[in-house]
Amino acid sequence: MSSVYAFTQAGTTTALTVGGEALSFHELRREVEARKQRLSGLPPGIAILRANRSWKFIANFLALYEAGLPQAVFAPEWTPSEAEMRRRTLGCCFELDEDLGASWQSASSSPQHHPDTSLVLFTSGSTGAPRAVQLSRWNIEANVAAVLKSLDFSTARTQTLFLPLSYSFGLLGQLLPALAIGLHTELLGNLVELKARLEEARPIGMISGVPSHYEALLRLLGSGSTLGKGVTHVVSAGAAMPLPLRQRLLQAFPSSRIYTNYGQTELSPRVLCLRSDHPAFLSSATGFPVGNLSVKLTAQGELCVRGDQVMLGYLGASEATREKVQDGWLHTGDVAELSPDGLVTILGRNDELLKVGGERLSPFEIEAALRELPGVEEAAVWGREDPLYGTTLTAFLQFRSGAPCPPKRELRQALRERLSVHKVPADFYRVSQLPRTANGKLQRHRLAECVRPEHRID
Figure 1: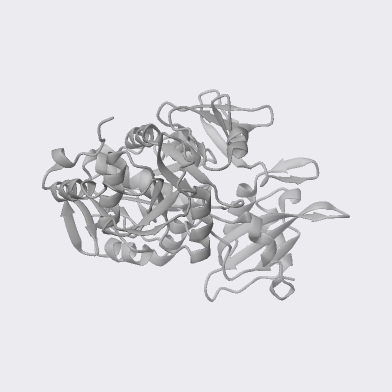
Figure 2 (figure 1 turned 180 degrees about the horizontal axis):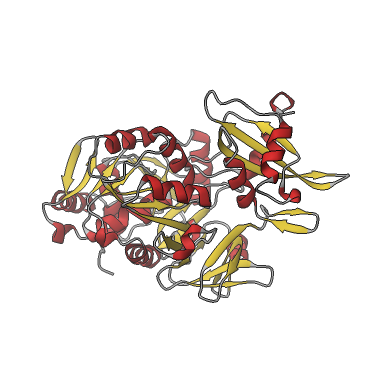
C-alpha cells in the first residue's frame, strides 16, 4: 500500500512547526528516508517510541510505518512502572531513542503480535486497566480517509495541535490527516500557549481537544470572549460534549465550524461526527458514522460498529478480543439511541448508566445541569449503592477559584428547576480536581476516592 502522506506534493510548504523550528514537507520527507536507512538490523518484535513533542518522533514514526515495521507509542510522562507494565504486555519488544538506537530490549525473542500489526496504542484506562490495541495499516489509512472528509480538512488553512501524540485522537485523528493532505501543523505544549496565539490574532486554523480542554480554554479567555477570527475548525472528541458547551463554543468562535465526535482506540479511532451546521448539533446527539463504518444496537441498546477501522485485536488478550469483537462487530460498551436517519446519541457506558428507581439514567444530562450551577467549573455524578434506598446519586463539584460554595439545600433547589426529582443528587462533595487521565478523560471508576467527610457539602 502506498503512503498516504503528501510530502512530495507539498514540497517546500511547512509541514511542522515545533518550538519555533519549522520543517517543510520536503525536509520531512528527506528525514523519513534517511531514518528508513537506519532500520536494518533491528531486533525482532515491536519497536517502542516515546511520543515526545518533536519532529524527530514524527519522522521516526513515519519511517517505521512506511517500512512496515510494527511499533508501539508510549507517552513520555509514563512512570517506569507504567512503562514496564506495557512492555510486559507487548512481550517481544525493544525501545528506540530519537536517533533510532536501541536503548532497551526485552528478554523475549518470540513475537506474539498479529502479523498485520502496524501500530500498538494503549487504551487510556479510563474504565479499568489499559489494553494494547493492535491496528493495521489498513485500519489507520481508513481512519485518515474518513477523518479528512468528516472534518473538512481540505478547507483548513493550518492546524494548531496541543493534544498528546501518544493519544489516538492527537496522532491518528489529527496529525496524520494533516500530513496526508499537506496541511501545516504547529505543535504547542498547552492551552496557555494556544490562548496567547488567540489573543495575538495569529492564524490558528483547526484546533482540537476534549470537552474539558474547551471548558478550560473558555475560562482562560474570559466570559463573552469572541476570539475566533483565526480559528476555522473546532474539533472535540474523547468525551460527550454537553449542550451548554456547544452553545458557548458557537458564541466564542462564531466564524468557525464546530465538530463533536465519538471514537475508541479500538476503532482507529474515529466513529461518529456531527457538525455545527446540522440542526441536531444543538441537542444531545453525538453524530453520524464516518467512512465506511456501519452501526447497530443490540437488544440491550449497546452500540456496535463494523468496518475497515475495527482493530486487529488486543495483544496478549485473546479472550478479551473475542468478547469485544463478535462476527465482525465491535461492541463499544456504550449504550446509545439510533434514529431512523442514522444519527447516534450516546447515553453512556453500560457500567456508567445509573439505575435509579428502576429507570436507567445517563450521567451526561445530570452533569450538564451541575455545570450550570453558579461558580461550578467542572462536575461529575456517581451512582452510590445504598442498602436502604438502592442507588443514590452523589455529585462532585469543582468550583472556580474564589467562587463560594452554596449549601446543599440551595444546590438541590437550583437543580430541581432543571431536572426531574429522581435525577437530583442526594449528596454533594467539593473537589479541587476531578480524577482524569492524562488525555483529560474523566475516570468515573475513581470517583469513590473523592468521598471524604471533610469535603461534604451540607
